[in-house]
Length: 366
Figure 1 (cartoon, one colour):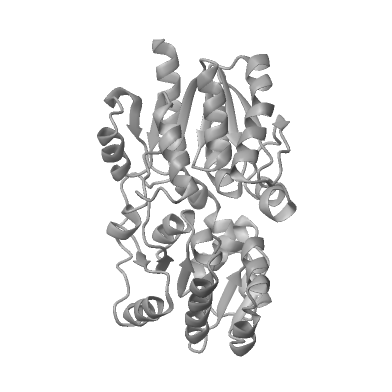
Figure 2 (cartoon, one colour):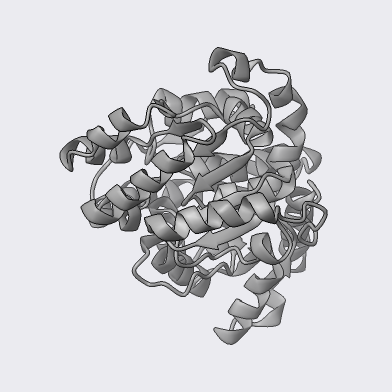
């Protein structure tokens, strides 16, 4: 059985790592790993491969950065000859980035079965490029592996047959659980003069937050006020840093020295910081899931989330991305910390094993 596995951007690497490890229990599987090169630099790609012990990619498309349309087209153009040459039984895609939909489209048009891991997640906000990628990928996938129960209900509403979808748990949590002890041995806090539970961790990169000057200013001002109570370590995305300069928002950072801008971290270092933070403020999808398992309070600066289990069974709280709402949520968190004992079903570190088992069973029934 030949499976081409796609990864392209930083969020993909934590999802693909446990699957590549799980294949080793099945000698009949020949996995081929394709890196599209959507994220390609040291901090966004190479370091993650080393830390997560992901095998070196068999092929790298090296598409680089571009607009959504151009990047998706480049991936499709470069991936089609690979499918034609290798003639896989399946193409497996993860998550919701441009690499996901691009490779799923190529496979589907060539008659190759598509597997989507982390299927069924919906924010119901079609202004998000990721939501379009999720919906389209699910609609052309043959096997859909779902990480939380809301995903099953979403797929049912969209008419996906029951025998194509499987509730298996969350591969992101497989990666977290297999690396958390190593991450905790790192002395990251000392390097930044931080104390356990004595700092907040910030990330922000979504266009809705960082591409609108007034909204971005309001968010930064709220972070500044919070930083007067607790220092904030802001792992800043290149897009976010560029917009701070473009919009002339550096004066806020000068006024509030409690906000410390730092370059993006490797996976293990960042896991260490998340596990030690008093609070995480983010617009990331994956961090909502990781903080839920770590028991770290998370304020998600978005109007919606495709991961509702992190709210109903986790430590996540959805916060409108404006200054007043952020400050109110921060105050409420001081008075009413989230429950840390509830965890979503099957987020137990064994999702990848379930997925590969189902794939083998499906192949043998064909």
